[in-house]
Length: 389
Image (cartoon, rainbow, N blue to C red; front, side, top):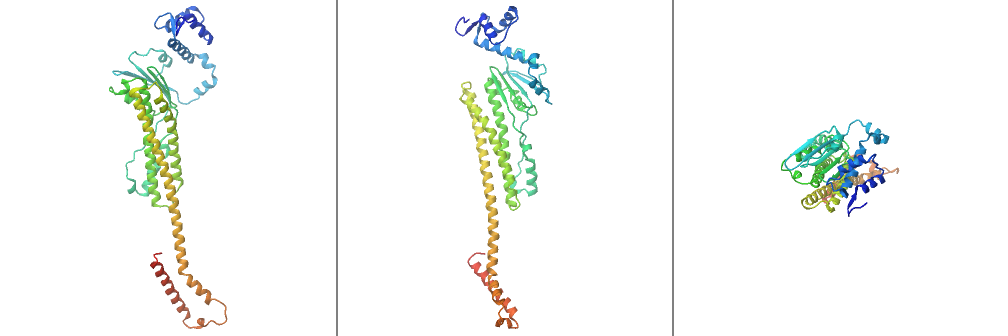
């Protein structure tokens, strides 16, 4: 039963465990267990000690062979994967750091005692990061072949890989991240920051480490957005070089990619917004999270600018094609107007009347051509006078 507010007796603790389906085989086992749980040796169990005990029991269940065998689908799914899961960890403080990569004895590591000086960051992953080729060449002086070559290097597979879920589990002094794969993840960037002795990450709690991870994620989105902007500039140059044979589908494909990046920014922005409004993050960490939120908003605004640019290029392409068609129609109309008198006279003198005086002249054919040329010349001069040519 309750001994005092917020405290639980050993017997009440045992009844609670049995109500949850957790039974102890003997009194000796239970006593050994509560000796580990009751850290302050007060002969009572506090709420925090109760939560810690439940977490330890559930964690032990994960390593139980009978529990794993009872989950055949999960076990088969894990065993069928070609690449093994890798667990890494970094324990750090302002004046020291220790990293383990990979952790081979997972069970021993989980139950080991964390150093009193350390904040722990654990990473279990199989993920890939974005890869961005550098490009500083001025596009306006590049030839069409050079532009096509550069654009082939900026295919979506070279700019970014399909995004993967990153899960963060935050506890006091411990942060665990879980990713889908382990090739080129955020781990190297975070490790680089942690190994700097004067790094703010090592001077603060896990809340600041959460900010660092989010900041690294957002930093990877920025060059991708910049790459899409460069890609649109190159497509614009190609379109200006040869509008007639330009493939408009390339702009549509780029627009789809930008929308994809914009879509991936949304859940991250929602997470950061919840962290900013949470009571768990205050002071300097809250300010840094606000900076990340502003940075992400800038990326989203840049994506929207790219989408506007795509729509502008499509409209410009359609206007150019319409202008070309209008020019062709205009030229055909001028040609028809120039030769209209010739068609009229041909129709007049081509009538099948038995007697037309002009057709009996010896030089009538040459006179007809002379008249046609003079009339056509006068029409051209008239068009130039009206500035229609």
